[in-house]
Image (cartoon, rainbow, N blue to C red):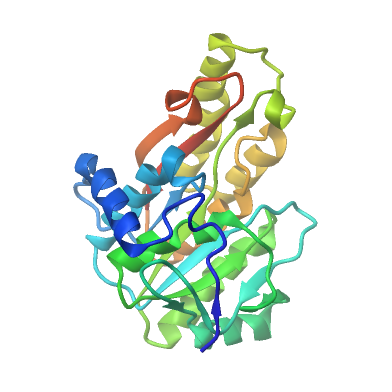
Length: 281
């Protein structure tokens, strides 16, 4: 089986199993628990592990405590409303813990129903949004298969999430979902300085701009998530987040809980920074 190489290992996260495990053990020292719900999915950030790995790790750990799925639908990629959709429909994806196999039966049926640009082990777009989650997924769900998809911030993406869940159920497969997005990218590095610099800008991002899109996610309103991001630049992969919400609702999720919110400023203060949220459904 041909496997897609891990392009960010050794830079954005460790490139060895032992290195990844050491980092994961550090992340889960402060792991949170969620009471009263058995989550079926979540939202995770995708900066380098130094900045947001703890959030993504602990969301995926919480999911693992809810049971072991056969397949994880992983939505990501930096796409705009006019972008194509992307799907890896066969093969595997390499991680420091070993390869994660693609669930090709679901992928084949999705490809029959919707148009996708197909990625392969040899031909793909270099993208961190999905890859950075895979070592966590492989660590906490040793034998799970994945469906990695890039979905733009448009209404039809929501239908793809619903269809993927229905196909999995038709095949008798237990499924969980994960949407990968960071939040506001603020500062001169990102060409976004509408509220100046310093503490006031940081407060605006935290208490207003990021809060708006987080509230939409917590409402489990995928259409509102897309509108928020398109209007206020507060989610870089709104299609992924919204589609994960749509799929989670199809799985029966009726409420969401914020696990963690932080920014890169909290780790490395500066005039340019990014927001990160971890949410479970």
